[in-house]
Structure formats: structure tokens, C-alpha cells
Image (cartoon, rainbow, N blue to C red; front, top):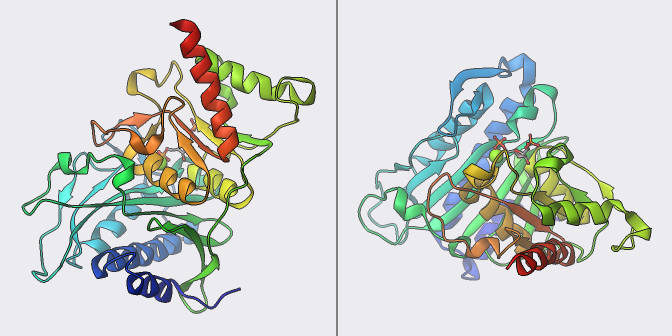
Length: 339
Ligand code: AHM
Ligand code: MG
């Protein structure tokens, strides 16, 4: 194991010119907020933090107490550094501007987050996590929601933190994907995997199979062929895993490969998909690409999607490069036949 702390890692990234002081501060503050969220999550029933908050978010989803607590922790932590121009969250209707405290700041950023992804799992003690994305703010006044509608290729940093058996923070600033583990005794994140590399091929897929009958034909065919195993067209036996916490499913793929998909289905078609482009799909896609994997909507590179709304949803396929390409091929073939 290395003895490189997140603090040292970020300072070295700044010295190499990969990030500036404001972006270093932004990632540092997010990591500190994640430590605080980890403490709340760990307390579980003892902290009185489980259960529903009795409120709903903009997307009509019931909020858990920990959704609200995690959102407040991230907002509070990031309100004072002078490195941000604003924040947007899966749990808030609109973005909120951050007052400029530091006139000397060379650059200012927009921070987007899903404060507690997979929160439907929280009451049953399964891994949940925080996902974040950082964009540059090019304007000089107060940012509005439109300033956040930048394609994923514009992200300058992204990451997620999993609150599981251990607390792991996985980040990218566009120079590889790196994983840190929280050392609770010393209270800091320590680099545990430098340059994560996702195997190109896999025999493992992650999807909510209960939606099968609602999928489009190319998705039915893709998964159907995987289930046929060695004697089918894919010529290998596949294994399936579905945690229903994107952070946990993606972290497994970061560790040993696989494909994660949340395709379009009849139930979510009107909304465009289930997962959110700006808070979930884009940051995860940036991390996956930086680890040698691929990420697609099934019909195009995820990071090229031009966002049209803050809470926009998209179909998601990400993970081992060759497997994502296989999934995309089923969609391409279907679309070509339907022309
Ligand atoms: P959330 O952000 O409200 O927690 O929703 C996103 C989660 C993902 O973590 C996970 O992949 C998916 O929803 C699970 O959906 P389902 O319950 O339909 O399997
Ligand atoms: Mg989520």
C-alpha cells in the first residue's frame, strides 16, 4: 500500500499543472464532506438517520433522511471556499449560486452532485455513495441553471465515494482514475489504486432484470444472447450482479470489469431513462473512460450528449470497453434494420 494521501496526490497534480489551486480546494472539500457523510451513514439506526424524510425531490421521488442530510453536508462544506460559483444537486429543483468571497480566485467552478446515490438501500445496510462532477464556470456574473448544461467532455473532475465495508473515494481530473481508501485511524484518504484499469472484456453484467419485458428490442436481444451462454452467439457463460446502488455496481466494474446498464424501458421512456445525465451518467462515464472503459447511451458516446435540462435522464451502458461496444452494436443493427 502507498503512503500517498489525497492531500499529497492533489498537491502533486497541481505541481504538474493538471489542476489549479481552486480545483484542488474543491476536490479536498468534497472529500471532507464525504468523510462526514460516511460518519452519518455508519451510525445507521443509532444515529436516528434511517427512514423517510417525509419530503419529495423535484423528480417526485421520496427522499430519505440521509438524502437530505448528505445534501446539506455538501452544500454547507462548499459554501465558503471561494472556489465555486455555484452548485446543483439531484435533490434540489434549481442550482444555487455561491457568493464570491475571494476576489483573488483565478478560476471558479460549478459543482454537481448526487449526494446519496442508491439511498433506497440505506435502510437495509447495503453500500450507498456520493457522486460528483465539476465543470468550469466561464461567466463572470451569477451562474444560472443554463451554465450547467455542458457536455460531459467539459468536466474537469469527477468522482464518487462509496460508503460500504470500507469508504473509498475514486476520482479523475482527466489524467487516469485513481482510488483512495479512508484510513479511519488517521482520518485521511490514502491512495490504494493508482491508474485503475478496467479489463476490456468481461463475462459479468449488471442490469435490473425485472424490467426485461419493458425493454426495447435491441436490449432484449442483447441480454437474451448473453443468457444463452456458451452455446449462444456470445459463446461464453455470463454472470449477473445487481446491487441497485450505481456506486457499488460501478465500483465492482472498476475493480474487476463488467458492464452496467440502465436502458430505456417503457416505464421510464417518457422521462428519457432512469439515471440522471449530470449527476450520475456523466461523472461515472468520465471515470470509466479514464480507466480504459467505455460509456454510451446505446446510441452514442455519453460524454458527447448535449444536456438540455438540469435533471435530464438518459439510458446508460458503461464498463468494459468491448462489452459496451457489443451492447451498442445491437442498437446500431436494430436501428439500421428499422430504417
Ligand atoms: P437514486 O439516485 O435515487 O438512489 O437512484 C439511482 C439508483 C442507482 O443507484 C441504481 O443503479 C438504480 O437507481 C437502481 O434502480 P432500480 O431500483 O430500478 O433497480
Ligand atoms: Mg442516484
